[in-house]
Image (cartoon, rainbow, N blue to C red):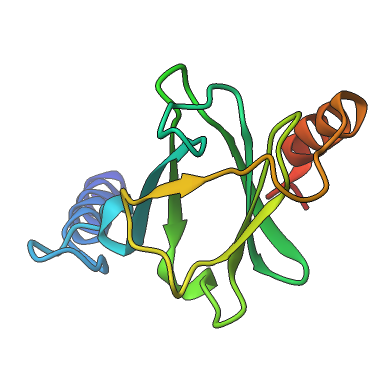
Length: 141
């Protein structure tokens, strides 16, 4: 009799845990995309040609960043929790032979091209590779 009661209590516990919801989605189930903002863009040169393999660093605040690299068509994408985005959040875009571009996230329209210019202090190849490798550690704490 004790085994039967314990069995039914365990079944009841499992069913109640499964049905407890506790999520943020409309149907009661949490989905990761419910709270993630997708930030997409493209890096181009002054002639509007795509720049492949540019290093794009998204600084969310002083101690929090995310990194991405542009694909062959110059595009990049970040999926970030909106709670991590602050007023001072900004991009730093680096590619060899071009000046570094800093752009406020607040003033950035998703899918709008980020233009790199050869005017100003051009990034040397060695400095580009150091930056390229350094953003791999972004988001790891």
